[in-house]
Length: 305
Image 1 (cartoon, rainbow, N blue to C red):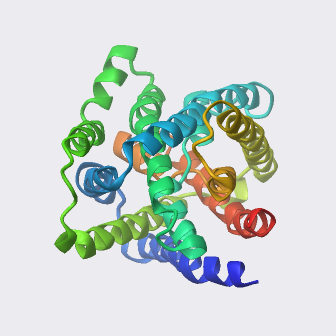
Image 2 (image 1 turned 90 degrees about the vertical axis):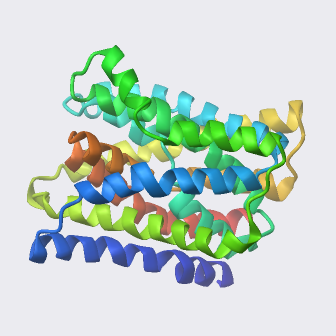
């Protein structure tokens, strides 16, 4: 029960910002566009640089590759679900929702609740692999939801600073440049701000949805397939890592398995808002998965730890 209490005390308060965003949009007509730009062009690159400067690049290579491969393989169940469960839903958006995990804004508080600072290097490494996929492939796919040409969609990827932040941070890490200790508090504030603004953005977007018209059965099936497929794929990747590489210990392997219970990244809503496309379906997928994960994470944590 201590695990559940720790998780709820550190993660549950973030959900209050979804409610706050919902009512702020309804009462004061709060808009989401400026929030997405602040996150996309300002705060997210800063967090990427901070996390990568702290990362062990050898561990980052293994864990980041596993998460990147998980994201890529999740396109398979997404395409199957798109064809058989939700043929009317944009398949590019659905692929992103299956592949992009909320490791940064949701996962880091979860890991802090379970392990404190002890496993932060691993979750940061997972975050790097997730960001590298999400800020490139997912942003490209979301650009294509506007029926843009492949060339223009690819050009959109290079307009966001996250990819340059990753490259810069990896170069600085190789050069053994350390993140200044006197900026640790500022980094924590930025991370907390990103989490709250991301949840706020979900609430703002959800306000514009007519919930009476939502096909809840379809969304439930889509999320069920995502969680089950993710678990099967990641269990296979963890098994392969143990057999071929063996860098991760038991707690680290279990923590990797816990990733499958994480919700869809709130960045999906940031991308949709910035590109002005698929905002409602993105918000619903992220919002509903966040509710499901609030139940799944404690249950799986009890089994694994």
